[in-house]
Image (cartoon, rainbow, N blue to C red; front, top):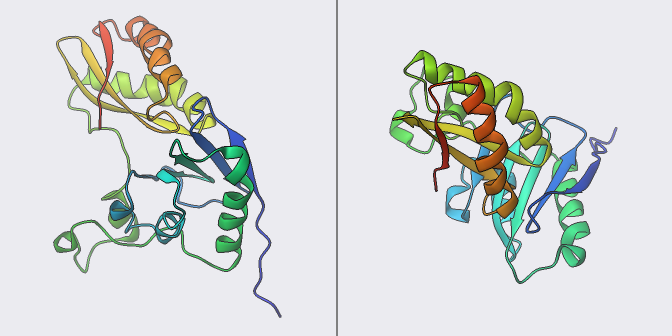
Length: 208
C-alpha cells in the first residue's frame, strides 16, 4: 500500500504585505511550540525551514501549531510565487519530510536525560520567565486577549521585560516589520495592558 498521505495547504494573506500564512490540515509542531528563523543559518532545528530557504526570495520563516508564516523579500510578488510555495510545502509534507529536529542550538546542552520537549524548547520562541506577580498578570493578559488575534494573522507577541512601568514585547512571524502591528502595539495592546494591569504605564517593542 502506498505511504503517500494527502496534505491540504491553503494560503492566507496577513496584515504584512510581505508575509503570507500557509495553513495545513495537520499539526506541524507540538501545541505551544513556536519557531522563527530570520536567516538560513538559524534554520538547523527545522528541516522544513532549511528546505524553504532554498527558495531565493525567502527572508524569514515562522512555524507554529498548524501553520507556517513566510516573509519574502521586496523583489518577489506573492501573485507570482504563492502557489509555488504552497505546492512546495505540500509536496514536502506529503513525502514525509520532517518539520523539526529533536536538537538544541548548543550541542553541549544535550544530555542523555534531555527529553524531546526539553530539546525543542531550547530553540523555540517563548515569553521571558516572569519574576513577579505583575509580570505574571501581563503574560496572562497577552495569552488570553492578544495571542489568539495575533496568531490568526500569522504572528506571535511575546513578553520580554517589565521595568519602571514599561513593558517590552517582541513581535515575530508576520508581525516582523509590519507597520500595522507596530500601531496596534501602541494602541490596542498598550490600552489593554494599562487597563488590566495598573502597574503598566507604557508598551514598547523590543527589536530583535
